[in-house]
Image (cartoon, rainbow over all chains, first blue to last red; front, side, top):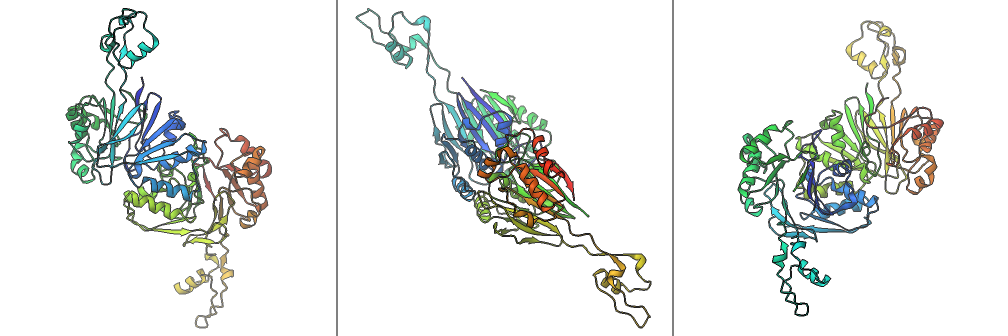
Length: 305
Length: 305
């Protein structure tokens, strides 16, 4: 049961050799979801041997270049590769116009259908759902309209316990039990009533990943991401630069950890590091003092939830 | 006297690990001119320790993504770096609308002035000039409006030969000679007339570089680039795929060499290789059979003219 995140970029707005702008790939079962798409993301996917054709949905947090300038190339390459499967792009209003203006002047008429889902970046609402995941927007507070995203896998079914099942059940009866139904007694065979709860073990609760992109420290977010299995939170600065962080609507490593602590998250990833920091040990140390289960969201990191 | 070209990308439309999309940096004295700007070009410039702030002009050949998707990030980073010097962008009509639509929705108001020069891609005309270079458009024939560019350094002055100058010339007289003027006889001092040609050696002819971006093989181009010191010509395919090349409005290595031969170019660079070719020995061999002074325009190559 796959629920796995790969970090493709840990950098921020100013480019830096060895660090790439924000992009993450979330795999839930066979579903592949790209979260943000900074310049060069298609090459990162190639380097990690991820097929572009496997992507179902792209979520864009906001229209600062380090979060979406790779989208032009990604969509264009999908077209060149002969993609026919539809693609959904979820992002702030305006993104569709930026993309269609470029496509028009590049004379690119994609051979696949792109559904654009505009996000109200001030709301906490379901913005996408399929058989594998349900995704909510998370209101960020940045210099420009910006959404985070909360991914929750669809509830799994309770698992039937073979040893507790009586012999002689028909396939229909087994299917009813698997779907969570109770079976009434069967006078014809003399089988007593069977309660679903008595022959199954409850499924694990749905796993959840919260992506908190560029934002000023917003304690109220904790309530929306309460108890998530994995929290990503930007940590552009160290805490001695908290004034600069606030001025630019960014957060510090310590603030990211405070949020993870308040939200009672299981694990924290921090990223979106300012290019002024060549080493990141201080970020990790600062966050771990508040929230020990912190890791750096650096290039290539693979996290299984 | 610098006249130097650096190749930043040798790839074509389909991305490939280890090869980057088209971008070249031309240095003429202190002038820095970027030619095409595929995705990731700003990072290539950083890797080669080229300051973005030094760029004066960006020339874009056409609006296929592998030739301009890096421009969004480049212009954005220049803004973040606090650039104030104006920038000129030369390219096909439509590019300005693509860029301004993105900038508007990204809420980016650059702190520097961008002058956009639309190019008539069917004409051979001067599209840019400063104290160092004069640049002509070269009509390419591609699936979309596409221009090549011919760079010619401004004529240099003939050099005065110290040993041939009589003693006692005033600074004004020296300046007149340096500017190419003859001096009449001076009855006051008895100095005879002085012909500029008699006291100088002619300057070397202006150096020229022709960039022939994506195009179907077009023999008529040879006349426009006759005798250039350095010719870049795309060579997307090998000659056994000349039909595919023609269908997609691209050229083969052999055709690039034919053009260099007909144009009597001094040297040829070939690039824009299809990602189907992992090795490029065959391209080089095929071209050199026609035009021995051929090199592969691979990543990082530095050519002094």
